[in-house]
Image (cartoon, rainbow, N blue to C red; front, top):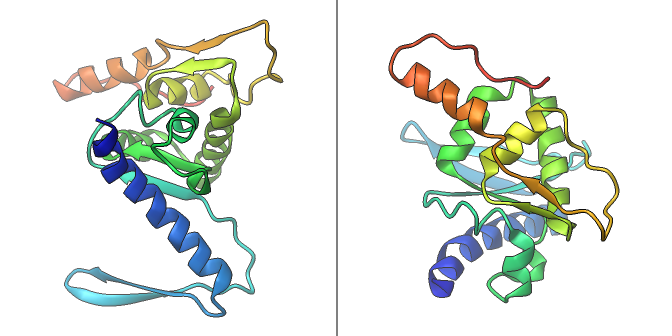
Length: 178
């Protein structure tokens, strides 16, 4: 399992790290990509200061393993150089695309989410639970204490119910931030 995690999660986070370093160290960074069978170019204008948010999208759903980047680093699966990368499954990212209403909310979620990697007083098993926690207005968290443990579980229920109902054609109100 450790080798499989290195092949997938490590490779994805390394690509994020590489792209960030390329942007930082290159005078005029340019990325090329293919869209609709045509090669396109993305030129990064470094005169316009932008924040780099590293997101590693996995096809495989590692759920409770990938959400805890801190433990992957502590156990040698990932290099600490890849810290501050949000690791998310493609399927979870589709939920985010569907439910998050604005770029501002998405960026705010990412900031709060990545900050969870540093905490020792929190436990969670699933990215969608954290999204539900965010929708409930529970982020940002209070300062960390050694006395309290925060468990982020069962916050995905409204989201799961929404997709269960709409998946069989029953109208349902889309979960949103409160």
